[in-house]
Image 1 (spheres, each protein chain N blue to C red):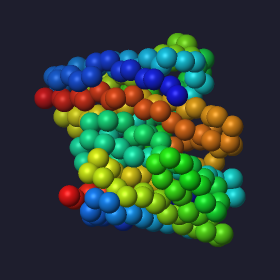
Image 2: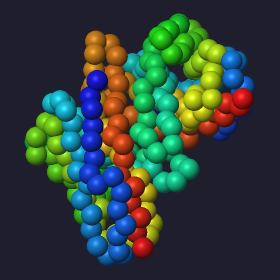
Image 3: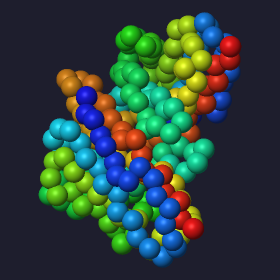
Image 4: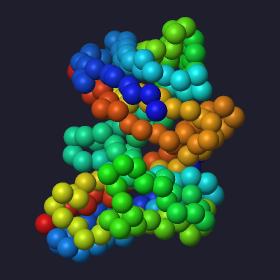
Amino acid sequence: LAKTTQPISMDSYEGQEVNITCSHNNIATNDYITWYQQFPSQGPRFIIQGYKTKVTNEVASLFIPADRKSSTLSLPRVSLSDTAVYYCLVGSLVGGFKTIFGAGTRLFVKA
Amino acid sequence: SAVISQKPSRDICQRGTSLTIQCQVDSQVTMMFWYRQQPGQSLTLIATANQGSEATYESGFVIDKFPISRPNLTFSTLTVSNMSPEDSSIYLCSVEDRIGAKNEQFFGPGTRLTVL
């Protein structure tokens, strides 16, 4: 399983766009990139998943460059309720996706 | 999406005792996972439990300490045996759901365990 590296914490203000970058230099050909969000006293929640280029859903966008050695989660116009820990994970969908969590990025959104 | 419940939601236990945590899913799933999360830390995978087979444990976790049952496709239990204060943590179960090319894990609310 490829190891991931993320910033430990980030600060932002309401209404700003937040970009969290994750490094995964040893990503394998079959690996997908997945991001989870976790609020205090709750289990993690799936945000977005992608393999290459760009993926967008109703809450976020995921940008993956051609070499796939990094990825960027983009949260548009964050609000106070986006304060949470964001985890980047890398793993293969082949043979069962065993999800190993890295340290995560603590995002603080200020008013 | 899968809805997961866990029992108990929290407990305070004495050193040397054991606690069994239950995980119930509202749909049939093949793979279930048990994680531990210590305060302020990330999640650590304990084991993967498939129905009808022995659980697969991650490095640092053994069956004698964390026996797991998986009697059917909607239920699993994790027992924390011979507890010590170091076992104080939040224990979460999760299930895997695949929809097309997307793989997603759903997590239960967690069981907060305090060992005195």
